[in-house]
Length: 242
Image 1 (cartoon, rainbow, N blue to C red):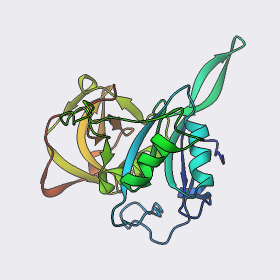
Image 2 (image 1 turned 90 degrees about the vertical axis):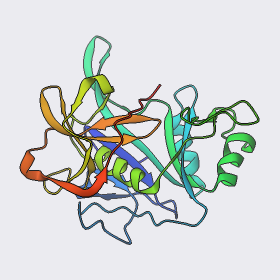
Image 3 (image 1 turned 120 degrees about the vertical axis):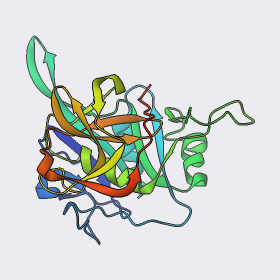
């Protein structure tokens, strides 16, 4: 897996299986056919009929192994990574680790997702659906697999691809929203990110939500870098990773 020495690192492979640097070389992402006009970040993802972003859970801390397998199979995949300080042999070292423990995102059809989870000799032994607990259980007494809206996934990739150690997962109790209005960051390293303004750890930040999964806060964002997205309010309900 290609890695860049950043505090928040993300890995994406494109539909041909290549990994190339983008965003100033900070993160390995897909080669771009289109560029987001708000952020300048290359997001080589085009909506495909019948495709969805699935969240999958790996066992035994094998998300990187799953990533490699999906790359080899030419599946569009996202694995957000970060560097954290860990004690190694009594010394503090920067260690690369997944931003969301044991989780990986793939852009596939429901039939393809089911094949990987249930029938793949290489993956089915340690790959599971991440279940959407906000929806009722089905006939199999299980919650349905969690899928992420395309626009929400692009927003999540945008914020977790920024090289800033202050990007963090948060619990709703850690943030105090100023309103339910959607805002867009119009300047700075988080340009293009859409979320809600909140005070987190004593600073003004923008919080991005993947419903049913997690909340992610940017680093400090000054008011001059924020504009309200007219006519679109966000529900105050928030859901965190369990």
